[in-house]
Length: 258
Image 1 (cartoon, rainbow, N blue to C red):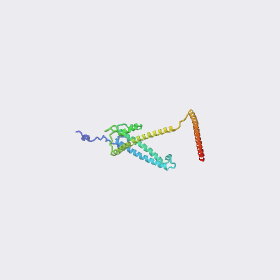
Image 2: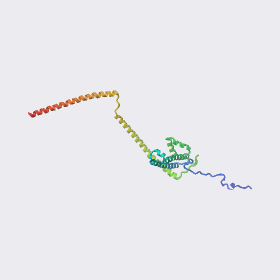
Image 3: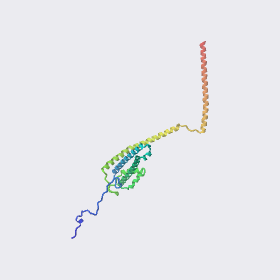
Image 4: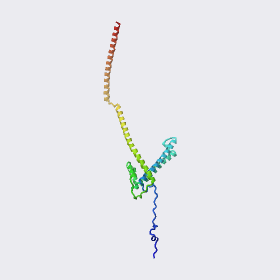
């Protein structure tokens, strides 16, 4: 009689040679895995806020170092500990923000079943802006794709992502009309400047050539003689008027004496 093995006795027993799969911990700033739309927006907002705070601290340190220096020049930032700390903090914050943005964008592209190398499109002017709208708005693939299973969006990410989306919509609704108004104001200002320049150019005397200047002088001399002749006639008329007035006065005096 043959002996039965343990696997034959219990066919539902798990195979000891099969090792259980260990699920990796999900790090939001890791380039591996996938990101949904709200998760991507939430971490965009978080990274932007952290970068803004670090930038504000670095600017405050730089201003403190600038006003406390005797020279009060840009060179003072490189000669003091606070100034060097401000510069180092700016550099570190910019690099950290750039790396974090790349990581979450790669995860978002993975959710769209796209390669992470497509994030280089952001470096192209205008095309990068259109591509960023696509990355934020496009719906990810359902189920599993070649970059893994779909990552569930956490409740905190839903709240922060929705808040950031509302803020972006309000910002666009305010800025787009303002930009059009600024363009119309700039065009009106340019037209006013052109009209002012045209009026000033009309008021300035034109440069005369030698021939025009000689003709103008001859005309001025002839007009001067006519004016002198006219003045002479007016003088004679006034003198005749004075003499007639004197004769009338003498005749009146003689009549009164008689």
